[in-house]
Image (cartoon, rainbow, N blue to C red; front, side, top):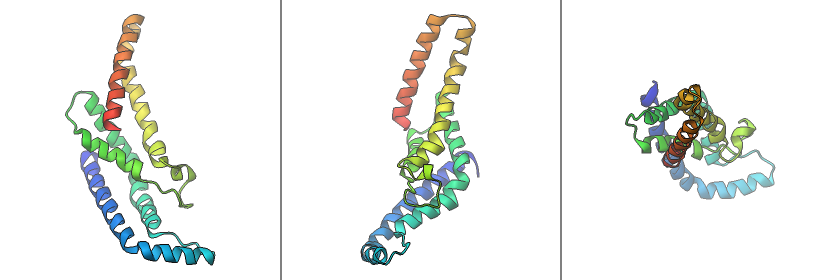
Length: 171
């Protein structure tokens, strides 16, 4: 699976996971609350079920797919930049999956990913910013070759405004 097929599958599975996680958390909330207190008193390494579920998602699905997911999301954003039709909500749902994935309380996961928004910041934001820089350089390179600084500044200002608007729409 690759491209939009992979992204569609991932978003669908993420939405199902979030729904089922909330359902299971509701079912086990009382047990978790009472058992957690007892286990903490006895010094156990007990983890709430929701933490275990997020850890499994992260380690078994997200981690192996993260580079493919990020690359394909960036490709969609590039397609949109090149005036191809891409559904904004589709990209937004994918980026939200990065926001929502927060394996904060799991020592098995590298610490930079356990920070609030750590998955988003370390798996998506850097490549996205690199794609913005690459796009701006491609669009304005010919202006610098002509040594037309005024046209370059106007063009880059316009492109930055477009990228800011796109960021507000998609992110």
